Length: 378
Figure 1 (cartoon, rainbow, N blue to C red):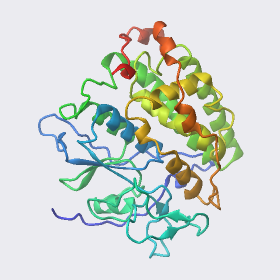
Figure 2: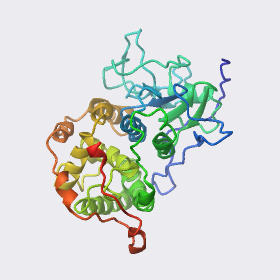
Figure 3: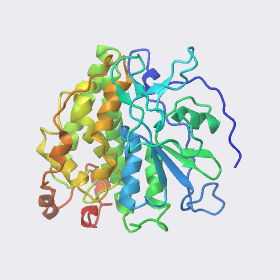
Figure 4: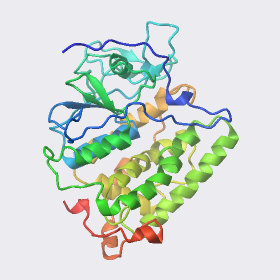
């Protein structure tokens, strides 16, 4: 196959996406193609055609790993996990200051520091991280440039087409929808539907406020550059946290009585909340460990088949605390409460099975909810 021609674009990261008032304003993903079994689709679902580039550290990438595991697509879509600590993506160009995701270096044995030359030492490889199997690229930026990217933000996850050598999508919310519906012919668990028709209204309702105030809300707190921007973000996050806690005190999952993609979207943030966001992003008005409702909710999801294998708390913490010298110059990683150990303890969410499920939606929308099946029974 012909290797794509690299292009040169002005590079940036999420830390550059700031408004004049010091608030973090995340820019939407640029690659938004779809895998579809519709006739004539440019990207039809096929086994061994697609590849995921992910980081254990990244909550957006973690969404895709979870969906892949829960649907049983490990033998259908291959995966490469990049290293957790950002490095310079053009180390030989002193004028290029971009820092980002890099692939494991299995041969050099180099010992690394953060991008300010401090902290560490960090290994250039972990056993669970691999070199790029397609281009032997050194960085995720290389993948984007070889695919002809014109946006300049080099994020994970990437859903990549190995046949046409291009990026299908880098929008996690759309990738998990594709994984849920388009590969059932090959999936080990095709009967698992993480976006059931009768819960779509409820899912959209909770997603619409959980994303800005919790998923992205933690970043709005952590990346804020003014007190006013932080105060607005933390107030909205705190209110949303309490709202989630109230909903989950009376129903088993966030959109109703079944585990859905909305739970995946929420779980990946709650998983990182106490170990990272409370300290690093200053979200210390609340704690998952101090909420019996949310702790047991996270326990149930963590204990579902395949989920724990997608969690690497060491790499989660190493990425956040060591990749942004502006926020943590010496890359010292706090010990933390060992939140993952808490997740291995018995949960009490079965007690809610006897309760009539309720939804955090309007009275008009509640009529769309039915069934009381749970993925935990699969």
